[in-house]
Image 1: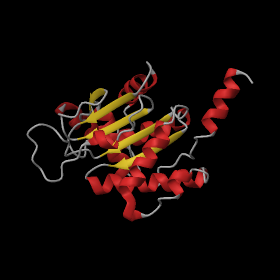
Image 2: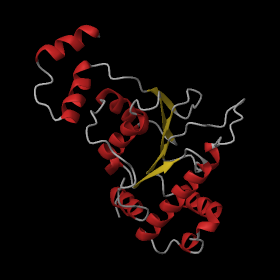
Image 3: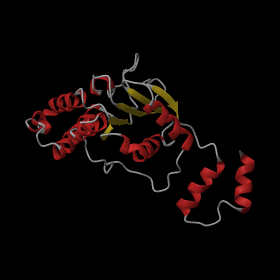
Image 4: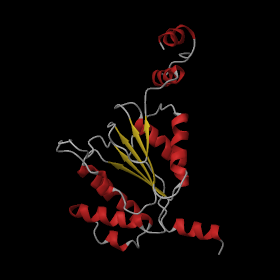
Length: 227
């Protein structure tokens, strides 16, 4: 068996069909190509765990940027998992959905099938983490979305979440975190700001309003002069 065929065989034993069915994707997202390129570089170079933190104001486009990356590069990973980490219950429920997806592809994952009960969420989290930590299961991508109340010194919010307890401990795989907090620092930090190119903003307006010609004429000139 060649090295390449051995790698394919190893990947297949941990592969899960790509799906972001539980994520709401905007119909008129304008791809931020520069940011996507920077994410791809950070998540494809070096060895060990690769991670990117997307931080910025609410509604600025962090989640949609993560979706765009996962959609464009999903084929680079054996599995892509999306988790809502706005609070502990949400992320545990996300782990439960991940467990069901894994079992659909790998019914022989006995540790998971034995505990598939929503009253055992902590055990499900632990079992999925063990599956992700397997020495041959290195090419997964996990997206932790809405990590807006992180555990940091001085944060007394009762909804605070410690993301470390939900990250697989093995030093492999890839992670994307989206957050409004500037205090989260996991891997390569990227600030997601407003669209710099007025043409991108106009394209969103044009698509959303179903109006032709928004990119032309007086409206473009007016907005351009305001930049």
